[in-house]
Length: 289
Image (spheres, helix red, strand yellow):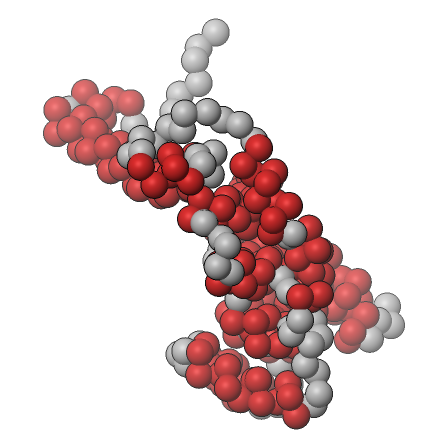
């Protein structure tokens, strides 16, 4: 039985040339170096969490003397982060729903319905991509206070329902869908909303998966808006709790390092579960036809 042949930019018979073999070696070295630079900080933080304060301050070794889980258990109890995990989960769930529904509806209008003036709306969406996100914090916070939505998760959800990048991704994907399917749904008596929720959205699982992963990561990592909106310890997200925890005088550097590990666990798990969908769907989104 013949072994499977590897195909790609550099084929097996190309490696017989010394120049190609040298270039291939350089590529492999650069890839390994990039992986090490990307993974080393993550590994260092996790390993540093196993050290006590004395070892953390005095020792320069990367590998800890012991791998006892007691320091993590102590920091977990000291941090009291279980409630904050739930708050972050609520924020993430609502953010993903709003990111899919509201941005999807606007992308549906621009990419499929195309009513009069849709080009103006599309240009405005594109222009908003050129504006730094930080300049919208002040007017956004003022409107939240004006409509008395403070200390609520609703502003966090709605902020992800107005993302220009998500709208463009939806619009480009919807334009690649066969127009005959949407026309058939209208002939069957479906309204525009019914066509979106029952026909277009189920056919858009690839782009929905990509945007969901982006929205989960962005919502989980968001600090500024939850810090400004959610007041009081009862509704603090994980990132806000870490900031408050770092300002306490009784917190040592080793305990802070372990608290960072607690914040990194969900994104890491998410990546390992959906890494295949993320890479494949991100590539397929840009392919039309």
